[in-house]
Each structure stands twice: as structure tokens, then as C-alpha cells.
Image 1 (cartoon, rainbow, N blue to C red):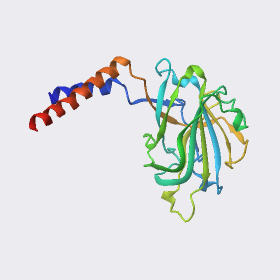
Image 2 (image 1 turned 135 degrees about the horizontal axis):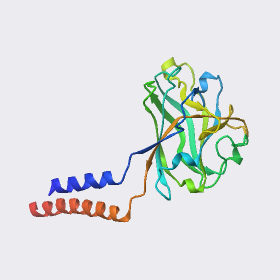
Image 3 (image 1 turned 90 degrees about the vertical axis):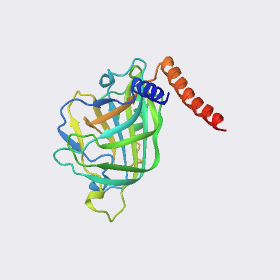
Length: 245
């Protein structure tokens, strides 16, 4: 019985499609970016950073949208390095925006659209990468998954980095350059300010190369099968306990 239930749960788990991944942009990376995480490199104390991802980059999402559960970045292959740090005070929001790549306003409020949500609550943020130019090993797991439907508009990532890493700190504790692409007409661009409280900043065609980890909404029948399997598993244990009582 245990073996049959384990096999059923395994099959159902994988049928949910938990680990779909989407890389944005797919254009060849040709630059790096210290924003929004490596403030120490600029000798600044805070920053605001908005990056837009064009709807066309999400053509593989399920019709009607999917949950974004994780962001992944990677070190720049030319200038990047391994590091492990805890940024003291960061918040990340997502929203749907009508402003596409290369059309972001330099006024941050004009870029924020519908369905704004805090996906990483304000506080310390752990970041680490081995410095590999291939692996997206810098992972940010969203504390609140974001449901994104490309039919509603482009996706806006809004990062508020409230405070730079205080000195003293070893080089390996400071965030380093991340892989980025600066290609006019691709699926990313950003607007930023070197002060988190600034209402506006400057715009740039570049953007961090980002790997989104997504999770589709399971079909009701799949949830029903999973629930049945869990009930059967729990019920079997209850009956065995009753029999031994």
C-alpha cells in the first residue's frame, strides 16, 4: 500500500509542473550590472531599481497565467566573481505595467500598474553565487508568489535597496557584477535612481538576465487525486494505530 501511494504521489507531484523556467532576455548578454544590489561599488547608500520584462518573453506560460515563485540571476562571465552576503534592507515588488521595454518612465510611480504586490518583504536579503558564468545560482525565493498573466501587460520588478552593506567587509562579502544585456529592442530595460527616496531617476536599455521559476495552476482533477492520495495515506496510518490500540 505504501509503495503504491508513494508512486501515485510522485506522479501527481511531477504532473503539477513545479519547476518550469523562463530566461529573460534570450538575447546574448553583452554587459554587466552592479544595480540594484552592489551599492558599495558606487559608494552610495541606497537605490531604487525598476526593471520591465516584455510580455513576449512569457509566451510559454500557461494560458491565463502562472505563479512566479523564484528569481535567479548569475554572475557576469567577464567581471563577475563569487560572493556571499546579506543585504541589510531590501524590498521587491511586482506589478503589471503598460510600459514596455525601452519605454519606462523616469518617474517611478508612472511605471507601476495593476496588481502591485510585495513579493519579498522588506528586511535582510541573503545573496550568494559561485561566480559561474553559466549557472543561475543566485536565487531569490519569493516570500509571496506572484500570479502573472501576460495578457494583462508587461511585468515590472521594483527593487528598493534601502541601505548599503555597512563597512568593514571583505571583498567576497560584497555583491559583484551580475550578467546583463544592453540590446535596444529586446525584452528588458530599467529605470533607476541612486537614492531609494527619489521619485524619479534615469532610464537605460539594459537589464539583468533573469531566470524565472514558475508554477502553473493545477487542474481541479489533479488536486482531487492528490487530496485523495493524501487522505488515503493518512487514513491508513489512522487505521493501523486503531488496530494496535
